[in-house]
Image (cartoon, rainbow, N blue to C red; front, side, top):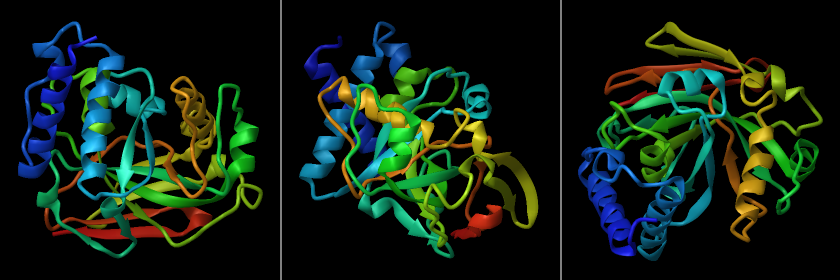
Length: 261
């Protein structure tokens, strides 16, 4: 692994890039031997510094769970990051585009846990039993590392490129609807840009929740009741900028709108 002082220094670079809305050179270009374990260590230092500064963790994001996203990024395995309370928006909100770098939108479902969930042998059925409800969501991507040539090590270090999420108003229990067939029709300024269906996420959008619980068990941790789990995109990311109106229709789960200013 990278030395602790190097991990701390990279975490500080990323924190400064977040503060200034900047972009830093690829970690893997400077440290070609950096591993996935290094990247989660960098993310962990960054996370703990944010919590110490008063930010409250409300959940986790899972990324790169669909073929569409893996092909769009050239990265072939899922990753995860953390979500803080000041990154949660509601449908209809205005979002300051300048708050983020390399701003893109993804179409997802989010899950709120009714009870804790832990591995190592967590299944989709276990995840569904632990979920209180599903809610449609848009993820705002926020990348502080140069995009060209990045690897999963770069992405994980950068909190899995998470910036914010916009939550819809319709809540559904897993037994009320077949979540695999929830559609997503994503429009920018009235023009449809991306479409998809939630089954594109590992065959079932809640499969990622079980995957994350099993990942956490490797570190002696678990997912806690009340956490929001953003399950991964079933469309390619859509670029947005100030002035854009965004709408996503989710069929029986309603729609989400937001405006970037």
